[in-house]
Length: 512
Ligand code: BLA
Image 1 (cartoon, rainbow, N blue to C red):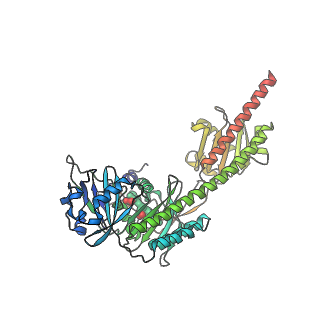
Image 2: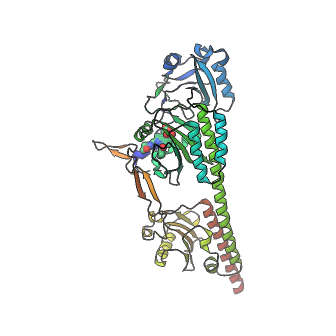
Image 3: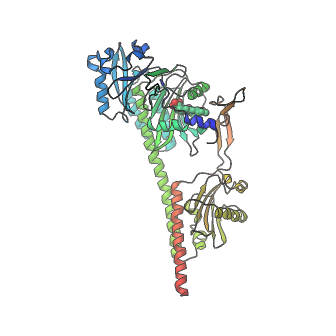
């Protein structure tokens, strides 16, 4: 990224903030179960001074061992035997007459113990609600309905003011594709937000940690204190902690939006972060571990439904493309010329991929089918392609104008290009063109106004504070090419090359 400010944004080490959200408290033990980190706010929960238990073995801390049936040391040892990193669990634990959910995990040499209130202000029976929600969600196979159902059901489960399904597009920016909200609030459905609103390292973290709660943006985080080693205090890695303090930049962003509490659930498609279920409340809101886990379960069910559905769609398209390649291969086997097989029959180059039009540049002649730019443009394009070096003889783009400015004049035909060279050194190509997708993107707030300059002329990164709808035409770009489309082009290229060399051989035999 060229802008140093946005780079800083991507580099903020949000997994080691040195503090936690203060609706709970945390301690971390080394392998010998000696306390190495403790949040300062343990004082307000247990009247213990954090400093006083640093370096003390857990078994020697009165308050944690007095509870006969719930010895904390036993819980930690038990959790360590299980794989609680991928499958965290909460234990109910009573301290000073308050019930906590104790959430234990082992990561990077430390047992991290988060103590959260077990309270809930939801009145429904969670288990039966989740059961009903899942069957309602799965009752509809259409993806749009599925997403809408998920938003409704999550809203029922956690009771937030606004629940959105937020989908990432290929370039990283996102769109609200489903929403459930109280009538009092305006709809954000269809709004687009720039990629920088959720920086790279946050997305990586959200692939590991599938839910996070920001209970109250107006509280001050509690510092995690530790003893310095060789004069240096090493911050604890809170990747898996349920209480990790939130990036101050994001807190400011939420305040700008008027949001007091935010909760989000990751939606994965395989190893990719497909999107998030983003939930807002306009007053502070805490939801307990079980409630968050229920929302996580719904997110996981949605994730697999999306993966399944998208795979199904891709497979269907791939099958259509394969069939077109097979038909053209049959033409080629009938000993017709290459241009005849690729351009002049019922099934043409154009049928192999979803495109506006296609062209074959072969033996110094141009043959076209469908909606393509004029010959002069394609000739120049072929010359330009011949001068480039690219992987395996392929060049793909969804914004040709960025590399080949002349394309700016051909937005109705040539915004996307998949070019495939035939042979190794020859200037012979199959070309597929895509027109501009004239999507009117409704940006929420001007995405380019992220960097602000202060009175001293220094630029600062700041979350946008205008959330007025802002429209921007996505100009001169086309739908991106998918992997299975490239695969279809590769297999056609192989068939065509095979036919060319077979013909050359036949010619050689005849001449000999
Ligand atoms: C995190 N940004 C997030 C999260 C969301 C968004 C959902 C996850 C945390 C959460 O659940 O709140 C963004 N929220 C949105 C969007 C919508 C929404 C787009 O509801 C739309 C409806 N943010 C900025 C800029 C930076 C930035 C410029 O706008 C960086 C300079 C940072 N966003 C940022 C960071 C996080 C974040 C660092 C991680 C917060 C954390 O987990 O600590």
